[in-house]
Length: 177
Image 1 (cartoon, rainbow, N blue to C red):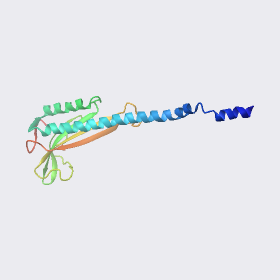
Image 2 (image 1 turned 90 degrees about the horizontal axis):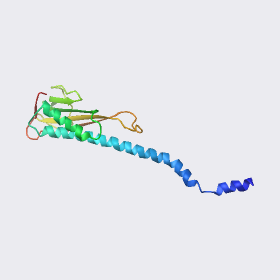
Image 3 (image 1 turned 180 degrees about the vertical axis):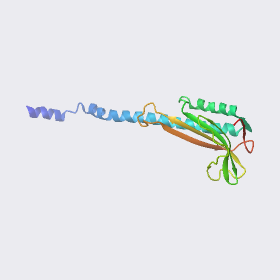
Image 4 (image 1 turned 90 degrees about the vertical axis):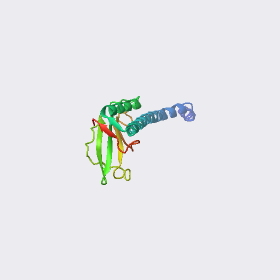
């Protein structure tokens, strides 16, 4: 009697699919949430990079800018970051001029990030500008805090620098910076 009952259980395959699903479901759900979290972080990082590029582009198109105009340009970054929070977004734009082989800050303005000190030496990528030339350097950082905290349980800081040459003049000037 016991043998026939054991033989029946051993040959019965009616619940195999349910058991396989119960074993795979937690793994598949974890992959799904992990991919969703990764995609959200990637989108926040890409938008933050776009903010940096947009601010540099807007400044490089001008002959002269004011501190108030730069504040308005920084506010555009908040629009680009939507639907992400703008509170962790920090921005800075600076004009850099190379003289005697040394790149130094001509003017700088920050939003949530301290402005660079005028005359401060800056390291630029090799062969970006030569003596007498200037460049607009836009920097942005974003402290991304995942809503799920599955793959990224702590705050992840994204940062980006963007360089553009002034378009209509040799050097963009800033009043009030």
